[in-house]
Every structure is written in structure tokens, then in C-alpha cells.
Length: 139
Image 1 (cartoon, rainbow, N blue to C red):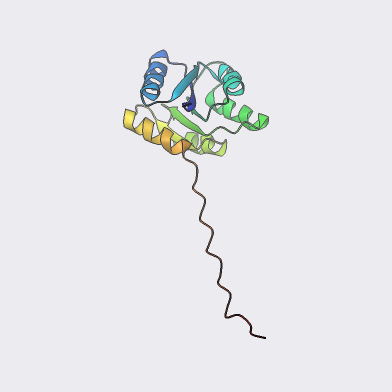
Image 2: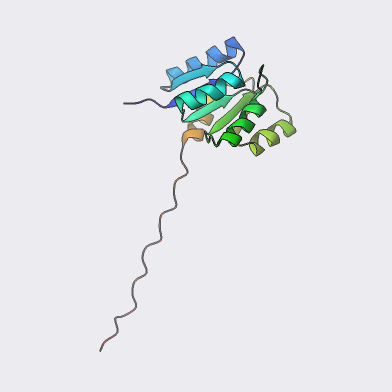
């Protein structure tokens, strides 16, 4: 059985290890990148089902990566996980295509719940039952 691929883009080695270990233990197939440039390359290479993204990184920050993804038509459900938690940061991340925003520090349960929610597909609404014909017309 194939495990779900998650890309974690984070420059802090301690946080990166914490996130990837927790996701691995939860049954996900985790990959990582240490900045936005590497993250963009890994997105093309791996085609993950979801991404956990930091904002403050060298070379290309999280906002820049979200912009490049939009320009290149890469649609990967993304959760921003960052120490930045100003309302403008949240607004900007969501406007650039992130689906969720979680501030550091975080609890393991929060991370797993949010990633699970990120992966869940919106359930289509069931089609209404067909309308019954009124009494048949008698000839």
C-alpha cells in the first residue's frame, strides 16, 4: 500500500526533524527541502499530496515559493507552519494559495489534525433523488 507523500519545507534542522519524524510515525511518506528554491525543485520531482511550509527561509521564502507555485500552475494543498503569526502574514499566505496556517510552537496533535484536514477531499454533495413522474398520463 502506498503511503501519502508530504513535503516539508523548513530551514531549521530541529523543527524539520520534529515535523518529519512525527509525520513518519503517523504513516506519511515525508520528504524535505531546506529553502524555497529546493522546495520548488522537490515539488516538481516528487509531486506530493500536500506540503508543510515555513515562511522565513534563505534564498526563497515561503511567500516567494507560493508565488512561484501559482506562476507555474502547481496546485499542492499547503499548510504554512511558521513563527510569524501576524494577521497580515495569514492573509497574505491564504491569498497566495495556502489552505491552512499554523503558528509555532505547535502540538503534535495539532500538526496531525491539520495535515489530515489538508488531505481530506471535500465530499461531494449527494445528487438529489430523481423526481417521481406524476401519475402517468392515460390515453
